[in-house]
Image (cartoon, rainbow, N blue to C red; front, side, top):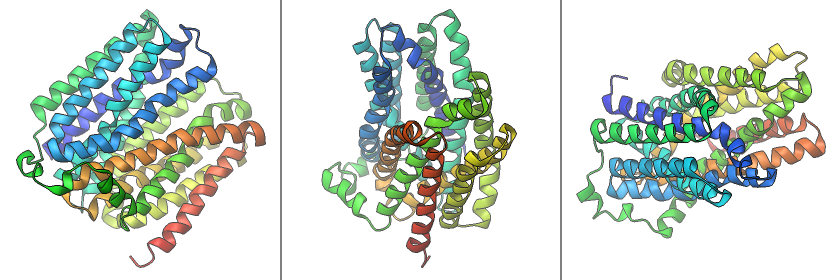
Length: 386
């Protein structure tokens, strides 16, 4: 926190995710006003992730060339426009348009990660990336609660407040965030050119390609948990929205504590590659044990293991991805990681939902734990020489 640019980007991401968290739980209810059926509501939720997937590497690569600060401001203004349309929406197509715009500009997390890579050394980069995860956790703790409170006055109020929040991030970025890219130099650097050849090089890279695959698999498996947790707790323990909301808050609080307090200690003791391998074990045991627990209070233990593993995995992957590439490629590379994660977050809930209804409530968690086991053994082979 003594690093002022790092503190500034932490606050900006937190406020950005606060606006996202305000809207996310309310989308199904907003869509119902326009007589949307369950399938349309599902597509509405997936629209944001789909367009974020497409935009993340583009925004990241553009920030390599034209500057982090400028692209952050443009993307934050785009989010404000998306939220404004959401508040004004008078039909389902306008609602979809608002999510498309917000998704296209929601890829700015890759820019924030590239900024952290710019202002940190290899030794403390994972700790910096952990701050992004902590900002996510805080945004999802306070955002839904604030959105639920504002929705009492009408569904447009949360959207308009999210507009205000987005404009606050624009001001914070403009006044408090110094630029880290030499735009004049970057304009004459071939590495920052946005071409499909450059994207293919990243995907085929020996040092980056496997991380993109692992990130996709981890996000797919983790999304199986997220997509089925509420249905599973309802079927197994009779939980309702209040109990599930409590556990999601518990998860968010743990994520903040682990990534701000525990992660720096672990980084000093273990290298990022070891953290990544160990994280898969924690995630495996947490998910494998969930269907086996006899009483609901044991969820505190399984979720502890799952959050610990996830808090180790994401910063480790992001730090490793930036270790073996030039600074001029941070944005594009981390953008690809975000796209891989977004793709996993699209497929994970779909696969998990099908398994839940066709094979039983416990099978999605055994499936997800199996994915983490496979990734662990894959990393054991891949990283054996390091």
